[in-house]
Image (cartoon, rainbow over all chains, first blue to last red; front, side, top):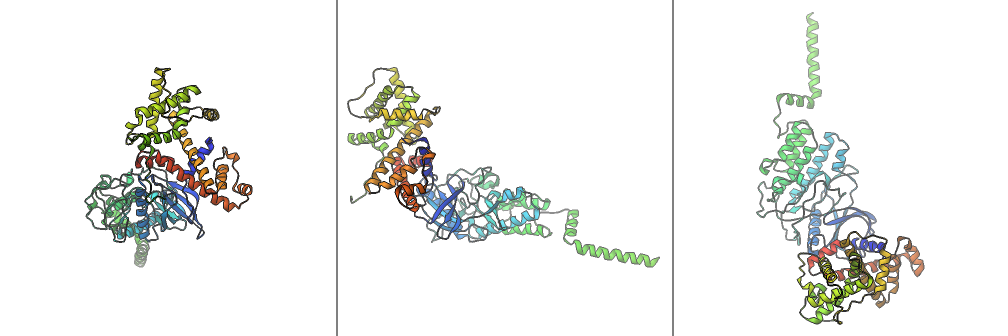
Length: 341
Length: 236
């Protein structure tokens, strides 16, 4: 008879991926989600640690679904070669039929946890601008992330900022050489915004559809499956309507709002998260430029500041020359006064 | 080797066949997979004596064959295992009401009940009080599935001239308790091979075991969707 202990052991064995015949060895589990598991693994050929994302063939419905879903995510990542986006090293199928991709192992801290330690606004906004860089790069390559949130951003050991979890990203163009970009499974549940962190690299969710780049007007006529994290989803994304890159701008607005800051930062966030996509910044670069203006003490486009605030801002920005001029004028007045005595 | 791959029909599909010999063959396979979970379930859930449980198990499969119990199974509504258990509960309840009139059959379906073995297993399991009979039935079915796959693995290893592979798997992965499990080094010493060989042999055995389990599971599922759900439940 198979004992209770052996029964549990064998069931566990079935759950573990079969990496025989590959160059990888599992070291530990990093996180798991609806469709797959991310493992810390060792690349025995190059003797280095990597992250291995493995999708359970049953999790996405059919084997074909899971293969398509992971292929989609891997190909999106492969086309996005940017310092702010985790590079993919390899993609393939395990002997047990599960599919996987290998990517850089990211060490560091998730953005939400990094923020929880209490950060200076300028530091937080600097990280935010780095996130904007990565997202703008993706948009320029016709990729919309669709699930931007602090939990999907990692701050590396050396200050690098990486946007993760491109599992539900959608691509804009079906390129001729992109043989299998669109997964078939469109019925995933949206991820719970309060879900347990998935460490760095996380599970794929759903994927889909069509093109968009930075055109202000959505071009996709087909309804979208509702995917994403509710608190960060734009109204059109929540409604299952067509979304474009401005859905990411909305999510960035929610993230920016959570950073706090004075009225001008709140105004930037409010504009980014306008209900109407046409009322938002029309590109991530515009959003980032306004944040950059705030950081350098200039007037931000999204905020009509009162005169007092404006004077204070100008004073803060030009404090030294203003103080020098005032000192000079005070000295002249003093000399005139002494000379008149 | 046949010129074309032989199409495999699942047991669940085959038990609804109009051809008697196909149905009988499928039933034999079904009985093989389920007799022990059914027997143990009847023993515990219905507080049946060993002899009564054996009779009810035999009669249940016979009646299912004769009356086409499983013809009404709808994969869209439930797992086959759940459906079978529901049929079993209904059958036992009816049999209890009509006590003493159990039909033991005339050889149409013979359930190979190994009463002493099943009782011995129940004795070993008696330490754990059963409160969730659904979970109990599932676990017993899983145990039966794994036992069948392990037996097939043993045969396959022997047929390939690699009995050592199964022996390592048996000692390491089928060990009854954690305390009994040897280390890879200990296994290497026992079999006079290197630790790397142990690693490779165990990897091969596990890979084959997984394949056998999934093949058996597929046989017991009516649709691809059910198989996907079952393999997901197994995590395989």
